[in-house]
Image (tube, rainbow, N blue to C red; front, side, top):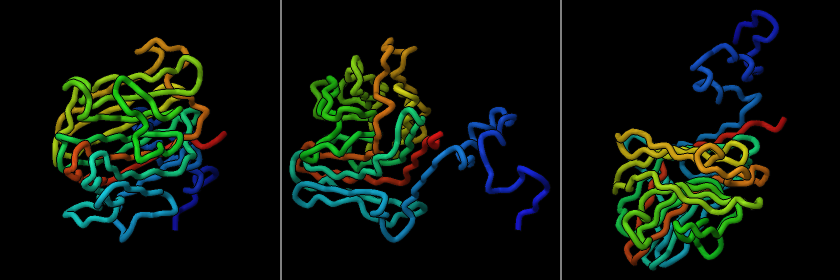
Length: 266
């Protein structure tokens, strides 16, 4: 039983004020401040995916929704695109997160092949129709009204466009769709580590592949000159993982873990 040593020492009262003088450790500790922060992490180490939290979909011949896949040393769920050209598998969480509450997402995942496929990870305002992505092209062409995703698509017109990009779009005036390249290519059978943080109407994201260092890309007032921001922070969004084949060869997507966070409502 925890020892009570005085007012404010109860373990159930953890808040950011406890870490006010923690310096650099504050960034590490803030997700323990559950009075102020919502934090959900799923390592997929159980017998099945929590279908009360996630909605799963797959479209196309032999396509399979994400399901537990036994692998050495880690819990993993695997989805398969199946064998139809443009067939897809996807996972979406609850539509409860807002940029105005500083929502963020982290995911660790890998694809068995990266020569003919499309991938999105991030936040969307609704599940896109017809088994499609939030962005149909890196032009960028948005399907979603509000979304911020890390995206790549090997069906783009050039090698520069089919690299990994940050794509954003917002429903407020002047929040046009925007694309910025990380200058990175996905690597087959190698874990991709992605983070995306929305702060109000702005977005900052990082990507690392295998043991390579992180590359950071931002869509915000300072880096892209849009006073309206790049996604409407007042719109509720959902965590989103999407994989599509661009041929008749199935692509396997292994999701090792996903975390989502947000400030609590004041």
